[in-house]
Length: 165
Image (cartoon, rainbow, N blue to C red; front, side):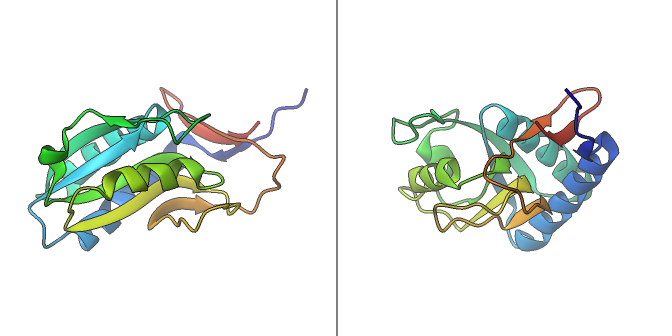
């Protein structure tokens, strides 16, 4: 089977993450501390990369939070590595690697709406533009017009990449 060329190479992903970090800083410039909450697994890896970049480009104090959600059954109980008291009254950025239908992001957003936040934004590396829910990414690396049959895979590691699979 022929493998598709990468949509994003490692260096392009790093560039997109840096740009997203600057956009987040510009949006949260009036905050001293923000929470970057990544949806496990790849969303959390991306959140870690964004948090690292934010610490290099801003004076923001960044707290990481892992969001655990059953992607096959997103209405199940969602858990986070931080208690609601730890993110209450702060700005929060919810991060996932790929925005497919918006289902995962919509349920994760709903989870965080139970706690008062100063600002709430979303970030994704790849926005596929096939949403079932009225969810948008405030910060995105790339927007793709794909067919419903296409699957976009993001691989993080020594040679990170995003490609059709």
